[in-house]
Image 1: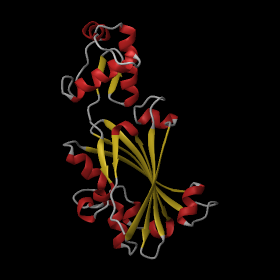
Image 2: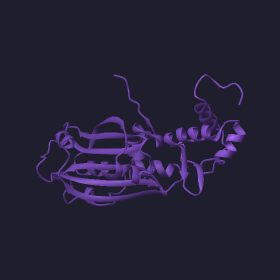
Image 3: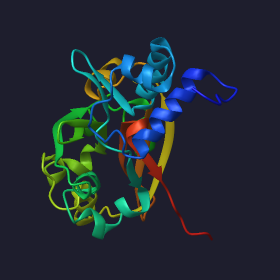
Image 4: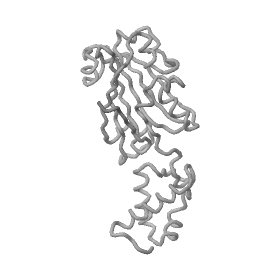
Length: 253
């Protein structure tokens, strides 16, 4: 290989393969050549290619299917545009923002919902101003994907005095999702806050989201507020960092 930059050779090889994927030489969902073939093509050792592939796996760009080979991840990162996804018009084109985002990719949203009355986590109870010593919240626990590709785990917590006996406790909450149901119940969300951190995935998250322990997830703590400045929903989104691009915008004051 000619003109190697002054950096680790395997990282340069990762750059070359990454660019080939971006150029469409290796299409999304398609197989990569075997490591020995890549090594011959790039003029490096197989061990160097192996190290480069590990970088791309950590980035989520490449997946290894044992016994089948190496494949380019099927989906590019999904742009999660906060301004668009929380507008009424955008949400009500489907069963909520995620539904609309996935259908825009030409994919079928898959959402498994479990609804429980729970003792809320302390940080959630503090935001919602509800007790931590009793089942004071309704939790909507959703495992979400596009076709068979897992994309996020989202758990919404709603005070029981708001959710009890309403569509919020139903698996299918209808057009616009629960934000539209809040508005119908007199708890229109007029302000949203989101706190974002990146962290290693838990064992459950590694399993469902088909991740490695070396990868990272975004944890977004989303809170919806009414005009009376009451927090009526806290949703904790857990999303592979390689699967999403977070896009925020706001008007200046």
